[in-house]
Image (cartoon, rainbow, N blue to C red; front, side):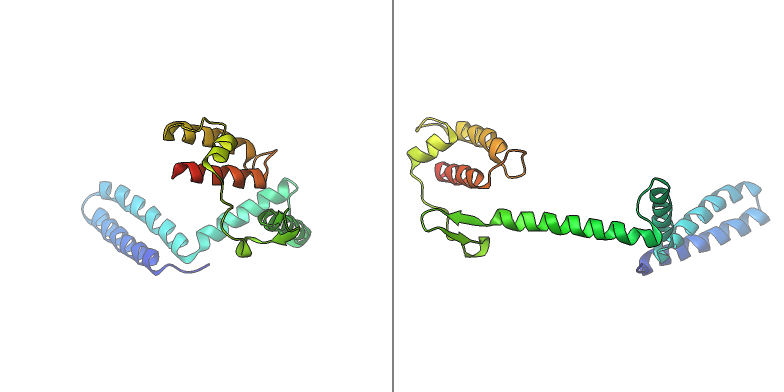
Length: 176
């Protein structure tokens, strides 16, 4: 953990106020010791946070809880870490795959970086894709786009990347 000089400086300032209040409480009035106790607690928490020990303590507690619930912890956690890494790699592979498209006319595969601008679409075709009339107003177009994109979004259960791009292109065409 990185040390935070600012938070440690705040802890030092609160520590100095705690000492001053404790001395004042001992010399003048014992009621002053109550705020001194509060300032002492704040000092302790700021120091724990600034040195990184608070985060380490929370992390250890979470690890113990995970071990008690059957999750990965300690040396046996290496297997769990490998599983998580493998799952992450699979997600990344799927994401990269979703950026690839097949150009049906040429039968070639293109990645996102070497794709050209979206294909030009007539206003009539764009209206048909969104399911609106050719002379629809902007509010109707926006509403139709939002409804249509929910159905074809790649993150949806039955989403389709190509259809999503087509709907987006149609919306951009009609938005002009």
